Length: 501
Ligand code: CS2
Image (tube, rainbow, N blue to C red; front, side, top):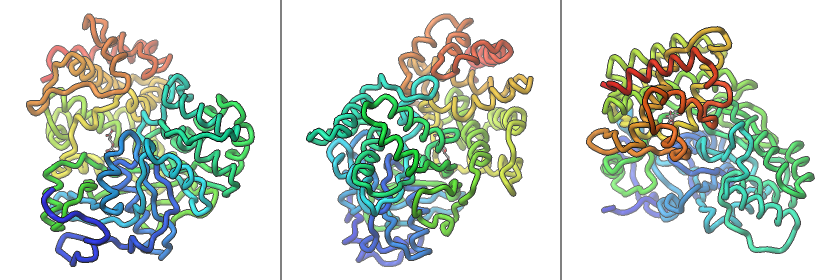
């Protein structure tokens, strides 16, 4: 940090500068109506921007956001001194611009602020809770139910059971997003503060219904939760959504660019491509921001959009990430510029994915594919292969294995998808053995199942595919027994492990 820091005070002294857009709402006039769990870069570059634009379009000032971080207080340390203000640096193919966002009105870390967060979820002025806690944040077990053995979730459920008994007690810090949400819902129910809508914005297939089912299944394990469960069934809605914007990790170079544009330091800076899309099921329990006035699509049926996005964009992304990292490509754009890899993603989409999709109204899926691939090729995003490669055990089931199952059920062998699975296996093996360098830097396996995966990846190469396909948490009970698929993975893997280049 070297200059003055962005804040509401310094904002007043900021004058119009080329390439910089000041907040389109007056942050001092906005009050909190949304609680967001998972205050990462994606939320700040996506839903917070739609929310600010909707407030500006309607003049409704009650839709400010309380952003709640997940694992550490670092984001609070970045944003609290800035009064929640931050910039989004947009990296287009031809130009870079910065907009400051005024919709994040408060920030909290559950480690120290759980009582305040619960209170806010239970406030009558709060109508919406949104979540971006990543695939692994939901702590689901094999089969999709809650992982009750997860110590953080278990601690939260114990606290919830105490809170439901009404026993006077200190508010224990929430340790999992689901625990925080359930405890907030319980307080809201107890206070009779009215209906609420919970909007899952993570890349999970059928994210709204999946979260609703998870909430109910979790409450089954909590003594004394019957009345709460009934109230949630009647008064809480879980619309499905499709979210899309490529948001690379912020680097020092981005911070320096933002400083040059703004003349101020911004510790909360996030970066995004110009494209941004949000499709939301219009099924709310109460009031909601007019996100459609900010370019979002509110619709009765999100499923076709969500499926197309996960299977075309996210699955191609992972393909480029694993094959790219194995070939030493640091960024997705570099991987996309490699003709072999561009060919691999085209084969994946054309041969395996498109036959499983129904086009959403008015969408031409081949054009959608071309637009997605063009976005990946944007060299200015700087999105790294290693960032996208993270958490493969959580991501592949959501973005790829549905395609695999659908093609197998249709009697086809999804060989291109088998290549992606093989690339992931090769990546797991190389990273867990400390054998992969990208851009001169060693890459470690970053995955919540890292130790299980490393164990399965160790051992003879000729049975590597079989051992990895036997990891049920990823491939379920069915895929290891699909012989044609297993053989396709084996044969793709033989090529990759013998000679990734
Ligand atoms: C990416 C996504 O990191 C990843 O797994 O595939 O974060 C992707 O950039 C977004 O879903 C784009 O909307």
